[in-house]
Length: 252
Image 1 (cartoon, rainbow, N blue to C red):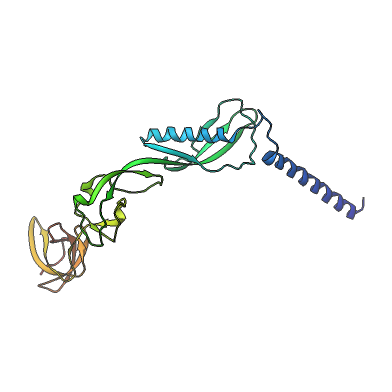
Image 2: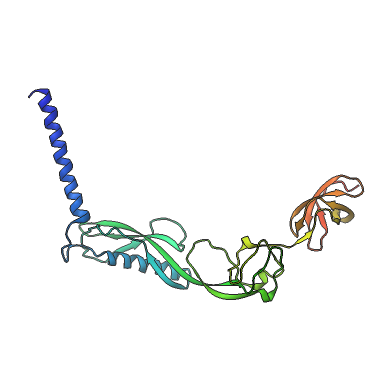
């Protein structure tokens, strides 16, 4: 056979195989539903929901709703002649948004991965009034309410003692669920303040004073200018407003 005819023959064969494969895929994805031969998508979703509910129960989550993501309506899977098997495909901690695997282990096996969102109800601290930047939170400013949670890793407070005495970092509207990003320890040392400096040397406390070079809250590390020597020292702000410096720094 001449080379040109051979090339044409090969191209025709490849085109034929491609069309046949496309036809098979089209039947699998969008072929007609025959009763009793196709697995219901609803049954797959329900299996994923049941698995997610079981995982949530293990973590004592107060589940109020479980929703699945969309599955391709063109999906055609052979009807499973045994109970569907569910599993967690990823070795991670169960969270509000996860993926559940659903598979059939019959003669015609298949596996589908279903995205799932779990909404739970939690108790969280909510502001009872609007507060401005720099306001100090009081007990009357917060209350505990039940809130819907459907985001993984969302941080919030559950006990009033965790926020009382803290300072708002920005304006916060009434009814807002408080998160750690919204509040901070109050500023007790302001830039330019003269503050006590305490250093522990061999069991003895040596005191001095210095000028704060920045504003800071209790627990913050701050730099100060020693009032006697003019040296710059560094220490941690204490709850009483003094600054404890690291040993080895010269106070003279």
